[in-house]
Image (cartoon, rainbow, N blue to C red; front, side):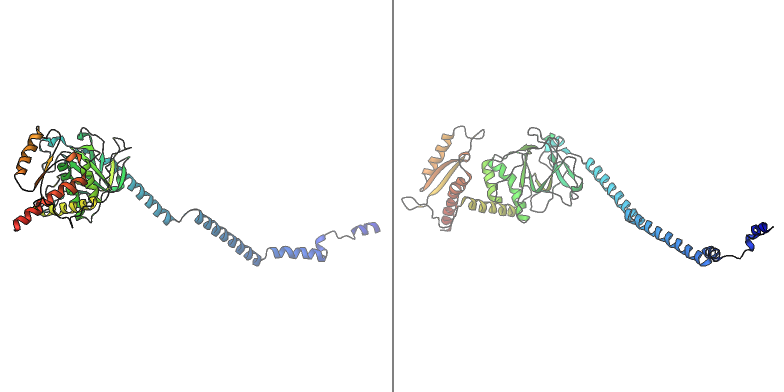
Length: 380
């Protein structure tokens, strides 16, 4: 019986047993874990972490991609650029080249707008040269473009106008001023070449003495690559440098050349008043004397043995199809007439065997002395 009591000494119901101190601490820590203050703290912590996470995600998206307003503006700029490029491409493809020599006007090649660049009209001012300038208001600020290197049929060469932002495909833009000359005759003959050059000199005078970077020469729409020696030297003297004649070297037949600034003449001296012609020729004479180092000051007219001023008579001959068939007979007639005048001296000269400066310093000087003599005689 005593053994049973010992066995029953451990309480049969543990809940009736007085709790020990450790057990009590365990029960209190669980109670604190579920307290209202701790729940509020944890909730606030979670909210803070959630907020910080989204702020960091927003910053990451901001740095990696622009805001919506910026994206919208960028799309508008991109679309505008694409539209501009598309429009420029359409303008580039719409450039139409026309024949430089329009055969429809062959029967009146020099009349009105001529058969050279027949769709264009000249700028006309009272007493001034007739010219075309590109770009200008009349060309709607478009540039002149030329295509073709034909030297035998000008109708195969062509021209067009194009905006600077939409030049034709494969075009080359040449900087500076370009003089484009149309001559119905040629650039070897002194008179015809001079007539083609004079309007450019007149334009040069009226536009701040601007000089060309290059010349493009057309004879009836056909390209010419050289001026006659006499005309070339006079051009060099007038503009202060040897003229560069564009030869289209390295340019294919189908490759256009466009010009930053171009002046076109096709009527020679047509439209120029007497005063404008006098002004232009005076400048050219002055430049020629400077170029050839000819001074009229201090030169005393020659006299013969009797003390009479020498009267110079120059027979300026030419060669080729328009020369005299019997030159000796013609020269003999002038020699006979010159012998009848005291102090007369005859000189026979050919333009093709004298340099430009020889003509200026010798032949023109003889003309000048004759003019002086006649003027003095008239005064007496």
